[in-house]
Length: 495
Image 1 (tube, one colour):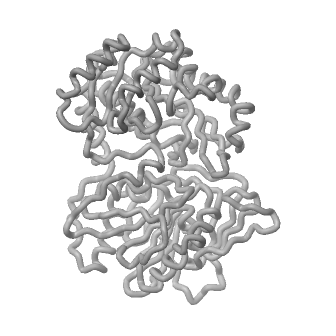
Image 2 (image 1 turned 45 degrees about the vertical axis):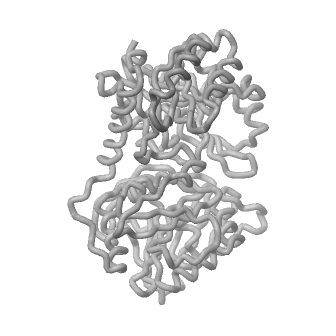
Image 3 (image 1 turned 120 degrees about the horizontal axis):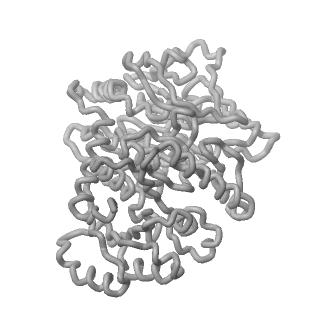
Protein backbone atom coordinates (compact mmCIF):
# COMPACT_ATOMS: atom_id res chain seq x y z
CA UNK A 1 0.00 0.00 0.00
CA UNK A 2 1.27 3.45 -0.96
CA UNK A 3 0.44 6.16 1.59
CA UNK A 4 1.36 9.84 1.44
CA UNK A 5 2.23 12.54 3.91
CA UNK A 6 -0.42 14.67 2.13
CA UNK A 7 -2.33 15.00 -1.12
CA UNK A 8 -0.26 15.54 -4.25
CA UNK A 9 2.99 13.97 -3.01
CA UNK A 10 3.04 11.44 -5.84
CA UNK A 11 1.08 8.42 -4.59
CA UNK A 12 -0.72 7.82 -7.88
CA UNK A 13 2.43 7.97 -9.98
CA UNK A 14 4.28 5.76 -7.46
CA UNK A 15 1.60 3.11 -7.93
CA UNK A 16 1.91 3.50 -11.73
CA UNK A 17 5.66 2.88 -11.42
CA UNK A 18 5.29 -0.09 -9.07
CA UNK A 19 2.68 -1.69 -11.34
CA UNK A 20 4.92 -1.44 -14.42
CA UNK A 21 8.06 -2.55 -12.56
CA UNK A 22 6.31 -5.62 -11.16
CA UNK A 23 4.69 -6.43 -14.49
CA UNK A 24 8.11 -6.25 -16.16
CA UNK A 25 9.39 -8.73 -13.57
CA UNK A 26 6.63 -11.20 -14.41
CA UNK A 27 4.26 -10.48 -11.53
CA UNK A 28 0.54 -9.74 -11.83
CA UNK A 29 0.02 -6.35 -10.15
CA UNK A 30 -3.55 -5.08 -9.76
CA UNK A 31 -4.07 -1.41 -8.80
CA UNK A 32 -6.67 -0.55 -6.20
CA UNK A 33 -7.94 2.63 -4.57
CA UNK A 34 -10.91 2.08 -2.31
CA UNK A 35 -12.24 5.62 -2.63
CA UNK A 36 -11.17 8.39 -4.95
CA UNK A 37 -12.52 11.92 -5.25
CA UNK A 38 -12.14 13.20 -8.79
CA UNK A 39 -14.09 14.45 -11.78
CA UNK A 40 -11.42 13.00 -14.05
CA UNK A 41 -13.22 9.77 -14.88
CA UNK A 42 -12.87 6.78 -17.16
CA UNK A 43 -15.53 4.36 -18.40
CA UNK A 44 -14.70 0.65 -18.35
CA UNK A 45 -15.93 -1.88 -20.96
CA UNK A 46 -19.05 -2.57 -18.87
CA UNK A 47 -20.01 1.10 -18.85
CA UNK A 48 -18.93 1.72 -15.25
CA UNK A 49 -17.27 4.93 -14.07
CA UNK A 50 -13.92 4.90 -12.29
CA UNK A 51 -11.16 7.40 -11.63
CA UNK A 52 -8.78 7.94 -14.54
CA UNK A 53 -5.78 7.54 -12.23
CA UNK A 54 -6.74 3.91 -11.54
CA UNK A 55 -7.29 3.37 -15.27
CA UNK A 56 -3.76 4.67 -15.90
CA UNK A 57 -2.42 2.32 -13.22
CA UNK A 58 -4.20 -0.55 -14.97
CA UNK A 59 -2.55 0.47 -18.26
CA UNK A 60 0.78 0.34 -16.41
CA UNK A 61 -0.12 -3.21 -15.32
CA UNK A 62 -0.99 -4.01 -18.96
CA UNK A 63 -4.55 -5.00 -18.05
CA UNK A 64 -7.98 -3.62 -18.90
CA UNK A 65 -9.28 -1.12 -16.30
CA UNK A 66 -12.40 -2.18 -14.39
CA UNK A 67 -14.45 -0.52 -11.68
CA UNK A 68 -13.52 -2.92 -8.89
CA UNK A 69 -10.10 -1.25 -8.99
CA UNK A 70 -11.81 1.93 -7.77
CA UNK A 71 -15.06 0.79 -6.09
CA UNK A 72 -16.00 4.24 -4.72
CA UNK A 73 -15.71 7.37 -6.84
CA UNK A 74 -16.88 10.70 -5.45
CA UNK A 75 -17.45 13.35 -8.13
CA UNK A 76 -17.51 16.85 -6.60
CA UNK A 77 -20.26 19.12 -7.90
CA UNK A 78 -19.74 22.22 -5.77
CA UNK A 79 -21.31 23.49 -2.54
CA UNK A 80 -19.60 20.65 -0.59
CA UNK A 81 -21.70 18.01 -2.35
CA UNK A 82 -20.61 15.05 -4.44
CA UNK A 83 -22.14 12.41 -6.64
CA UNK A 84 -21.51 8.94 -5.18
CA UNK A 85 -20.43 6.19 -7.59
CA UNK A 86 -20.36 2.60 -6.30
CA UNK A 87 -18.73 -0.02 -8.52
CA UNK A 88 -19.22 2.19 -11.56
CA UNK A 89 -22.82 3.25 -11.01
CA UNK A 90 -24.31 6.41 -9.54
CA UNK A 91 -26.11 5.69 -6.26
CA UNK A 92 -26.94 9.22 -5.13
CA UNK A 93 -25.56 12.56 -4.02
CA UNK A 94 -24.42 13.64 -0.59
CA UNK A 95 -23.00 16.54 1.35
CA UNK A 96 -19.60 16.12 2.98
CA UNK A 97 -21.27 16.22 6.38
CA UNK A 98 -23.83 13.54 5.59
CA UNK A 99 -21.37 11.31 3.75
CA UNK A 100 -19.69 10.12 6.93
CA UNK A 101 -23.06 9.47 8.56
CA UNK A 102 -24.87 7.72 5.74
CA UNK A 103 -22.31 6.28 3.34
CA UNK A 104 -19.47 4.97 5.51
CA UNK A 105 -20.84 1.50 6.26
CA UNK A 106 -22.22 0.87 2.73
CA UNK A 107 -18.92 2.11 1.33
CA UNK A 108 -16.88 -0.27 3.45
CA UNK A 109 -18.97 -3.20 2.22
CA UNK A 110 -18.47 -2.09 -1.39
CA UNK A 111 -14.70 -1.94 -0.86
CA UNK A 112 -14.59 -5.44 0.65
CA UNK A 113 -16.75 -6.83 -2.17
CA UNK A 114 -14.42 -5.27 -4.75
CA UNK A 115 -11.38 -6.88 -3.13
CA UNK A 116 -13.13 -10.28 -3.20
CA UNK A 117 -13.93 -9.78 -6.89
CA UNK A 118 -10.31 -8.92 -7.69
CA UNK A 119 -8.96 -11.94 -5.83
CA UNK A 120 -11.38 -14.23 -7.65
CA UNK A 121 -10.77 -12.61 -11.04
CA UNK A 122 -6.98 -12.31 -10.90
CA UNK A 123 -5.29 -15.41 -9.50
CA UNK A 124 -1.90 -15.00 -7.80
CA UNK A 125 -2.08 -11.22 -8.10
CA UNK A 126 -0.26 -8.59 -6.10
CA UNK A 127 -2.69 -5.91 -4.96
CA UNK A 128 -1.07 -2.46 -5.20
CA UNK A 129 -3.20 -0.16 -3.07
CA UNK A 130 -3.20 3.63 -3.17
CA UNK A 131 -4.19 5.63 -0.13
CA UNK A 132 -5.90 9.01 -0.25
CA UNK A 133 -4.60 12.32 1.02
CA UNK A 134 -3.01 11.96 4.45
CA UNK A 135 -3.65 8.88 6.62
CA UNK A 136 -3.63 11.00 9.79
CA UNK A 137 -6.42 13.55 9.38
CA UNK A 138 -7.31 13.16 13.04
CA UNK A 139 -10.81 14.68 12.85
CA UNK A 140 -11.77 12.24 10.09
CA UNK A 141 -9.63 9.23 10.87
CA UNK A 142 -12.42 7.21 12.48
CA UNK A 143 -14.33 7.51 9.19
CA UNK A 144 -11.41 7.06 6.79
CA UNK A 145 -12.21 4.23 4.38
CA UNK A 146 -9.10 4.36 2.23
CA UNK A 147 -6.04 4.55 4.44
CA UNK A 148 -5.28 2.76 7.72
CA UNK A 149 -8.61 0.95 8.10
CA UNK A 150 -7.98 -0.66 4.74
CA UNK A 151 -4.28 -1.18 5.48
CA UNK A 152 -5.13 -3.08 8.68
CA UNK A 153 -7.87 -5.08 6.94
CA UNK A 154 -5.37 -6.23 4.28
CA UNK A 155 -2.38 -6.38 6.65
CA UNK A 156 -0.67 -4.45 3.89
CA UNK A 157 3.02 -3.65 3.67
CA UNK A 158 2.87 0.14 3.55
CA UNK A 159 5.23 2.61 1.89
CA UNK A 160 5.07 6.26 2.97
CA UNK A 161 5.75 8.82 0.21
CA UNK A 162 6.91 12.35 1.06
CA UNK A 163 7.48 15.25 -1.34
CA UNK A 164 10.74 17.05 -0.60
CA UNK A 165 9.97 19.79 -3.15
CA UNK A 166 7.19 21.06 -0.86
CA UNK A 167 9.72 21.67 1.93
CA UNK A 168 9.65 20.37 5.47
CA UNK A 169 10.22 16.77 4.47
CA UNK A 170 11.48 15.79 7.94
CA UNK A 171 8.36 17.19 9.57
CA UNK A 172 6.18 15.53 6.93
CA UNK A 173 7.59 12.10 7.72
CA UNK A 174 8.02 12.34 11.49
CA UNK A 175 4.67 14.07 11.98
CA UNK A 176 2.78 11.45 9.98
CA UNK A 177 4.43 8.55 11.81
CA UNK A 178 3.85 10.14 15.23
CA UNK A 179 0.13 10.43 14.56
CA UNK A 180 -0.24 6.75 13.63
CA UNK A 181 -1.18 4.28 16.32
CA UNK A 182 1.40 1.68 17.36
CA UNK A 183 -0.50 -0.99 15.42
CA UNK A 184 -0.64 1.19 12.31
CA UNK A 185 2.99 2.27 12.48
CA UNK A 186 4.13 -1.37 12.43
CA UNK A 187 2.67 -1.63 8.92
CA UNK A 188 5.02 1.06 7.54
CA UNK A 189 7.86 -0.91 5.94
CA UNK A 190 9.60 1.82 3.98
CA UNK A 191 9.77 5.49 3.02
CA UNK A 192 10.18 7.06 -0.43
CA UNK A 193 11.27 10.67 -0.83
CA UNK A 194 9.91 12.11 -4.06
CA UNK A 195 10.83 15.05 -6.34
CA UNK A 196 14.41 15.66 -5.22
CA UNK A 197 16.30 18.35 -7.16
CA UNK A 198 20.08 18.51 -7.38
CA UNK A 199 22.74 16.12 -6.10
CA UNK A 200 21.12 13.27 -4.18
CA UNK A 201 24.42 12.61 -2.36
CA UNK A 202 23.85 15.87 -0.49
CA UNK A 203 20.91 14.23 1.27
CA UNK A 204 22.84 11.24 2.63
CA UNK A 205 23.02 12.70 6.15
CA UNK A 206 19.31 13.53 6.03
CA UNK A 207 18.53 9.97 4.97
CA UNK A 208 20.56 8.56 7.86
CA UNK A 209 18.85 10.88 10.33
CA UNK A 210 15.37 9.82 9.22
CA UNK A 211 16.23 6.12 9.33
CA UNK A 212 17.77 6.43 12.79
CA UNK A 213 14.85 8.47 14.10
CA UNK A 214 12.11 6.24 12.68
CA UNK A 215 13.82 2.84 12.48
CA UNK A 216 12.22 2.56 9.02
CA UNK A 217 14.38 2.24 5.89
CA UNK A 218 14.29 4.84 3.13
CA UNK A 219 13.76 2.73 0.02
CA UNK A 220 15.01 5.44 -2.27
CA UNK A 221 15.01 9.06 -3.35
CA UNK A 222 13.31 9.87 -6.65
CA UNK A 223 14.55 12.88 -8.63
CA UNK A 224 12.17 15.33 -10.28
CA UNK A 225 11.13 13.84 -13.61
CA UNK A 226 10.76 16.31 -16.45
CA UNK A 227 8.39 14.10 -18.42
CA UNK A 228 4.74 15.13 -18.31
CA UNK A 229 2.45 12.66 -16.57
CA UNK A 230 -1.34 12.83 -16.27
CA UNK A 231 -2.21 14.69 -13.06
CA UNK A 232 -4.32 13.30 -10.23
CA UNK A 233 -6.75 16.21 -10.11
CA UNK A 234 -7.47 19.69 -11.42
CA UNK A 235 -5.24 21.31 -8.79
CA UNK A 236 -2.23 20.05 -10.74
CA UNK A 237 -3.09 20.95 -14.31
CA UNK A 238 -2.24 24.64 -13.99
CA UNK A 239 1.27 23.77 -12.81
CA UNK A 240 2.24 21.96 -15.99
CA UNK A 241 5.17 23.57 -17.79
CA UNK A 242 4.41 24.77 -21.32
CA UNK A 243 6.07 23.12 -24.28
CA UNK A 244 8.14 25.35 -26.55
CA UNK A 245 8.63 24.98 -30.30
CA UNK A 246 9.24 27.41 -33.13
CA UNK A 247 6.34 26.24 -35.33
CA UNK A 248 3.62 25.77 -32.77
CA UNK A 249 -0.09 26.34 -32.66
CA UNK A 250 -1.46 28.01 -29.55
CA UNK A 251 -4.40 26.34 -27.84
CA UNK A 252 -6.37 27.98 -25.04
CA UNK A 253 -8.44 25.70 -22.80
CA UNK A 254 -11.11 27.25 -20.60
CA UNK A 255 -10.45 26.36 -16.95
CA UNK A 256 -14.02 25.80 -15.78
CA UNK A 257 -14.48 25.76 -11.97
CA UNK A 258 -16.18 22.35 -12.42
CA UNK A 259 -13.90 21.02 -15.13
CA UNK A 260 -14.09 17.26 -15.70
CA UNK A 261 -12.15 14.72 -17.73
CA UNK A 262 -9.14 16.99 -18.22
CA UNK A 263 -7.12 13.89 -19.16
CA UNK A 264 -8.83 14.40 -22.54
CA UNK A 265 -5.99 16.85 -23.23
CA UNK A 266 -3.03 14.63 -22.40
CA UNK A 267 -2.55 13.83 -26.12
CA UNK A 268 -2.14 17.58 -26.73
CA UNK A 269 0.28 17.98 -23.82
CA UNK A 270 2.50 15.40 -25.48
CA UNK A 271 2.57 17.13 -28.89
CA UNK A 272 5.76 19.18 -29.31
CA UNK A 273 3.98 21.27 -31.97
CA UNK A 274 1.40 22.61 -29.50
CA UNK A 275 1.51 25.30 -26.81
CA UNK A 276 -1.31 25.06 -24.25
CA UNK A 277 -2.56 27.83 -21.97
CA UNK A 278 -5.33 27.43 -19.41
CA UNK A 279 -7.75 30.36 -19.44
CA UNK A 280 -9.32 31.49 -16.15
CA UNK A 281 -10.25 35.13 -16.78
CA UNK A 282 -11.50 37.48 -19.48
CA UNK A 283 -9.00 38.33 -22.22
CA UNK A 284 -8.64 38.85 -25.95
CA UNK A 285 -8.53 35.34 -27.41
CA UNK A 286 -7.19 36.24 -30.85
CA UNK A 287 -3.71 35.00 -29.90
CA UNK A 288 -5.05 31.46 -29.88
CA UNK A 289 -5.33 29.25 -32.94
CA UNK A 290 -7.91 27.12 -31.11
CA UNK A 291 -10.09 27.68 -28.04
CA UNK A 292 -11.41 24.58 -26.27
CA UNK A 293 -14.37 24.29 -23.90
CA UNK A 294 -13.74 21.10 -21.89
CA UNK A 295 -16.09 18.79 -20.04
CA UNK A 296 -17.95 20.03 -16.99
CA UNK A 297 -19.47 18.36 -13.95
CA UNK A 298 -21.82 21.33 -13.45
CA UNK A 299 -22.51 22.65 -16.92
CA UNK A 300 -24.98 25.39 -15.98
CA UNK A 301 -22.71 26.73 -13.25
CA UNK A 302 -19.79 26.81 -15.66
CA UNK A 303 -21.91 28.60 -18.25
CA UNK A 304 -22.64 31.18 -15.53
CA UNK A 305 -18.88 31.41 -14.86
CA UNK A 306 -18.31 32.39 -18.50
CA UNK A 307 -20.96 35.08 -18.22
CA UNK A 308 -19.71 36.51 -14.92
CA UNK A 309 -16.05 36.63 -15.95
CA UNK A 310 -16.69 38.15 -19.37
CA UNK A 311 -15.27 35.10 -21.13
CA UNK A 312 -18.65 34.54 -22.77
CA UNK A 313 -18.27 37.69 -24.85
CA UNK A 314 -14.59 36.93 -25.48
CA UNK A 315 -15.52 33.52 -26.93
CA UNK A 316 -18.27 35.00 -29.10
CA UNK A 317 -15.98 37.74 -30.40
CA UNK A 318 -13.34 35.14 -31.16
CA UNK A 319 -15.89 33.12 -33.13
CA UNK A 320 -17.09 36.15 -35.13
CA UNK A 321 -13.46 36.84 -36.06
CA UNK A 322 -13.15 33.36 -37.59
CA UNK A 323 -11.50 31.57 -34.67
CA UNK A 324 -11.58 27.80 -34.18
CA UNK A 325 -13.66 26.57 -31.22
CA UNK A 326 -14.02 23.00 -30.01
CA UNK A 327 -16.22 21.72 -27.18
CA UNK A 328 -16.19 18.35 -25.43
CA UNK A 329 -19.35 17.10 -23.67
CA UNK A 330 -20.29 19.98 -21.34
CA UNK A 331 -18.32 22.32 -23.59
CA UNK A 332 -20.38 21.15 -26.58
CA UNK A 333 -23.59 21.75 -24.65
CA UNK A 334 -22.56 25.30 -23.70
CA UNK A 335 -21.85 26.11 -27.36
CA UNK A 336 -25.52 25.45 -28.13
CA UNK A 337 -28.56 27.71 -27.88
CA UNK A 338 -30.45 26.32 -24.90
CA UNK A 339 -29.80 24.06 -21.92
CA UNK A 340 -32.69 22.58 -19.94
CA UNK A 341 -32.07 21.01 -16.52
CA UNK A 342 -35.46 19.84 -15.18
CA UNK A 343 -33.92 17.40 -12.69
CA UNK A 344 -31.30 19.90 -11.43
CA UNK A 345 -28.43 17.59 -12.43
CA UNK A 346 -26.02 20.16 -13.86
CA UNK A 347 -26.18 23.17 -11.57
CA UNK A 348 -29.80 24.23 -12.03
CA UNK A 349 -31.15 25.99 -8.95
CA UNK A 350 -34.90 26.33 -9.24
CA UNK A 351 -37.43 23.92 -10.71
CA UNK A 352 -39.44 26.79 -12.14
CA UNK A 353 -36.45 28.13 -14.09
CA UNK A 354 -34.81 25.19 -15.82
CA UNK A 355 -33.85 26.89 -19.11
CA UNK A 356 -30.46 28.53 -19.59
CA UNK A 357 -29.29 30.25 -22.74
CA UNK A 358 -26.05 28.93 -24.22
CA UNK A 359 -23.47 30.74 -26.33
CA UNK A 360 -25.66 30.27 -29.44
CA UNK A 361 -22.70 29.26 -31.59
CA UNK A 362 -24.11 25.85 -32.55
CA UNK A 363 -27.80 25.32 -33.44
CA UNK A 364 -28.45 22.67 -30.77
CA UNK A 365 -30.59 22.33 -27.68
CA UNK A 366 -29.58 20.17 -24.70
CA UNK A 367 -31.87 18.56 -22.15
CA UNK A 368 -30.42 16.90 -19.06
CA UNK A 369 -32.06 13.62 -18.14
CA UNK A 370 -32.28 11.99 -14.75
CA UNK A 371 -30.31 8.94 -15.88
CA UNK A 372 -26.68 9.25 -16.93
CA UNK A 373 -25.32 7.66 -20.09
CA UNK A 374 -21.96 5.92 -19.61
CA UNK A 375 -20.50 3.67 -22.28
CA UNK A 376 -17.48 2.96 -24.40
CA UNK A 377 -18.05 3.41 -28.12
CA UNK A 378 -16.66 2.91 -31.58
CA UNK A 379 -17.75 4.93 -34.60
CA UNK A 380 -16.43 6.59 -37.73
CA UNK A 381 -15.61 10.26 -38.13
CA UNK A 382 -16.79 12.22 -41.16
CA UNK A 383 -14.77 15.39 -40.48
CA UNK A 384 -12.04 16.59 -40.62
CA UNK A 385 -11.16 13.14 -41.95
CA UNK A 386 -12.70 9.70 -42.21
CA UNK A 387 -11.25 7.53 -39.46
CA UNK A 388 -12.18 4.82 -36.98
CA UNK A 389 -12.87 6.41 -33.59
CA UNK A 390 -12.82 4.97 -30.08
CA UNK A 391 -13.77 6.75 -26.85
CA UNK A 392 -16.41 6.88 -24.17
CA UNK A 393 -19.45 8.88 -23.08
CA UNK A 394 -20.37 10.23 -19.63
CA UNK A 395 -23.29 12.64 -19.69
CA UNK A 396 -26.79 13.43 -18.43
CA UNK A 397 -27.40 15.82 -21.31
CA UNK A 398 -28.70 14.84 -24.73
CA UNK A 399 -28.43 17.35 -27.56
CA UNK A 400 -30.59 17.84 -30.65
CA UNK A 401 -30.35 20.01 -33.73
CA UNK A 402 -32.79 22.91 -33.80
CA UNK A 403 -34.73 22.45 -37.05
CA UNK A 404 -35.69 26.09 -37.56
CA UNK A 405 -32.07 27.08 -38.21
CA UNK A 406 -32.04 25.91 -41.84
CA UNK A 407 -29.79 28.75 -42.93
CA UNK A 408 -26.96 27.39 -40.79
CA UNK A 409 -24.97 24.70 -42.54
CA UNK A 410 -24.40 22.38 -39.60
CA UNK A 411 -22.84 19.00 -40.29
CA UNK A 412 -22.38 15.82 -38.25
CA UNK A 413 -18.89 14.96 -37.03
CA UNK A 414 -19.54 11.23 -36.99
CA UNK A 415 -21.67 8.59 -38.68
CA UNK A 416 -23.60 8.43 -35.39
CA UNK A 417 -24.95 11.95 -35.75
CA UNK A 418 -25.91 12.72 -32.14
CA UNK A 419 -22.23 12.45 -31.08
CA UNK A 420 -21.23 15.86 -32.43
CA UNK A 421 -21.51 18.61 -35.05
CA UNK A 422 -19.52 21.34 -36.76
CA UNK A 423 -20.13 24.49 -38.78
CA UNK A 424 -17.86 26.87 -40.68
CA UNK A 425 -17.79 30.38 -39.25
CA UNK A 426 -15.80 32.10 -41.98
CA UNK A 427 -12.10 32.72 -42.59
CA UNK A 428 -11.43 28.98 -42.38
CA UNK A 429 -12.64 28.95 -38.80
CA UNK A 430 -14.90 26.23 -37.40
CA UNK A 431 -17.11 25.69 -34.38
CA UNK A 432 -17.35 22.04 -33.43
CA UNK A 433 -18.07 19.80 -30.50
CA UNK A 434 -18.52 16.19 -29.46
CA UNK A 435 -19.75 13.98 -26.64
CA UNK A 436 -16.78 11.64 -27.08
CA UNK A 437 -14.23 11.73 -24.27
CA UNK A 438 -10.87 10.47 -25.46
CA UNK A 439 -11.47 11.85 -28.95
CA UNK A 440 -7.94 13.29 -29.04
CA UNK A 441 -6.42 9.87 -28.37
CA UNK A 442 -7.47 8.92 -31.90
CA UNK A 443 -4.23 9.72 -33.69
CA UNK A 444 -5.44 10.07 -37.27
CA UNK A 445 -8.36 12.30 -36.23
CA UNK A 446 -6.20 14.45 -33.94
CA UNK A 447 -3.49 14.88 -36.55
CA UNK A 448 -6.02 15.82 -39.23
CA UNK A 449 -7.66 18.39 -36.93
CA UNK A 450 -4.31 19.91 -35.95
CA UNK A 451 -3.20 20.06 -39.59
CA UNK A 452 -6.43 21.85 -40.52
CA UNK A 453 -5.55 24.55 -37.98
CA UNK A 454 -1.93 24.64 -39.08
CA UNK A 455 -3.07 25.14 -42.67
CA UNK A 456 -4.96 28.26 -41.61
CA UNK A 457 -1.68 29.59 -40.16
CA UNK A 458 0.19 28.60 -43.36
CA UNK A 459 2.33 26.23 -41.30
CA UNK A 460 3.59 22.95 -42.80
CA UNK A 461 1.57 19.85 -42.03
CA UNK A 462 2.76 17.51 -39.33
CA UNK A 463 4.72 14.50 -40.49
CA UNK A 464 2.44 11.62 -41.42
CA UNK A 465 4.79 9.23 -39.61
CA UNK A 466 3.65 10.45 -36.21
CA UNK A 467 4.05 8.45 -33.03
CA UNK A 468 0.76 7.14 -31.71
CA UNK A 469 -0.42 8.65 -28.43
CA UNK A 470 -0.95 5.32 -26.66
CA UNK A 471 2.59 4.30 -27.59
CA UNK A 472 3.83 7.64 -26.23
CA UNK A 473 1.88 7.09 -23.02
CA UNK A 474 3.36 3.63 -22.64
CA UNK A 475 6.88 4.94 -23.24
CA UNK A 476 6.33 7.57 -20.53
CA UNK A 477 5.24 4.84 -18.12
CA UNK A 478 8.32 2.81 -19.09
CA UNK A 479 10.52 5.85 -18.44
CA UNK A 480 8.93 6.33 -15.03
CA UNK A 481 9.40 2.65 -14.20
CA UNK A 482 13.06 2.71 -15.24
CA UNK A 483 13.71 5.76 -13.05
CA UNK A 484 11.89 4.08 -10.19
CA UNK A 485 13.90 0.87 -10.60
CA UNK A 486 17.13 2.89 -10.73
CA UNK A 487 16.53 4.90 -7.57
CA UNK A 488 14.30 2.66 -5.42
CA UNK A 489 15.14 -0.63 -3.73
CA UNK A 490 12.58 -2.76 -5.56
CA UNK A 491 13.53 -5.97 -3.76
CA UNK A 492 11.19 -4.91 -0.98
CA UNK A 493 8.29 -5.03 -3.48
CA UNK A 494 8.86 -8.65 -4.47
CA UNK A 495 9.22 -10.24 -1.03
